[in-house]
Image (tube, rainbow, N blue to C red; front, side, top):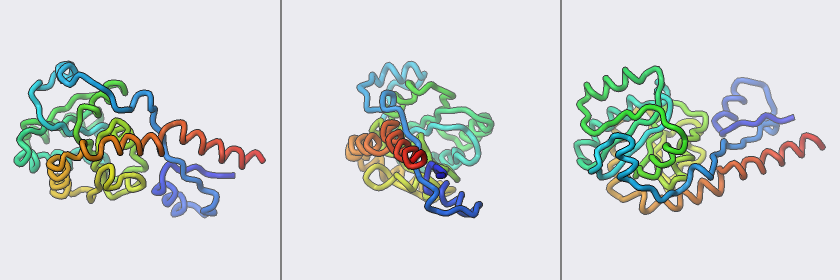
Length: 234
C-alpha cells in the first residue's frame, strides 16, 4: 500500500528510479533513543582522561561515523588545516572506524595537524558523552540519505554543520546549525570558525535538543508509523 522513505532525498530517489505514484510514498525520518542521546551533566576531565586526550583543551569539534569516502572526513581534515591556524584552542575528534582509517590518519599526519585525534569506535553511551563535550559536530558527507548522527548530536545540545546534500537539508537550519557545500574544505573551515567564535553551542544548544526531541524521537516516529499501518489495515 505505501512505501516509507527515511528522508525527502530518499523519496526523490525512489521517484527517479521507479514509476510510482508519489502519494504512495510517505516520509518518516529515522529516530533516536532519547534515553541515550540527551543533554547530560558530564565530568569533562574524566571523559578526556578516559579517551586519552589532553586535559587542557578549549573548544571541541567532533565527527562521528564510518570512515568511508562518502562521509567526507578527508574534507574535514583539509578544513582543519585551515581552522587550526585561526582557532588555536580547538581540538577535533574523529569517532568511528572504517576501511579508510589508516589512509585518513596518514593524511592528517601529512597535513601537519596538531590537534586532530582519531578515537576509533565507541558505544552509544560514550558517543553521547562526546557530543555533550563537543561545541560543534561536523557531518561533511558527500551523500547522505538522512544523517542520524546529526540528529543524535542535536539531541545532546550540540549544533551541527552539515552539507547541502541529501537528507541533512531536511532538518539542519540556522536555528540549530548550518549547511555548507559538500567537498568544500574552505567553506567548511570558514563556517567552523564562525560557529565557534559566535559561541554557537551557548546560543543554539538547548534549542537544538528540544527540536530533536520534538521531531525525531523514537516515540514520535512510532506514532507516525502507526498512523500509516492503520490506513493500510482499514
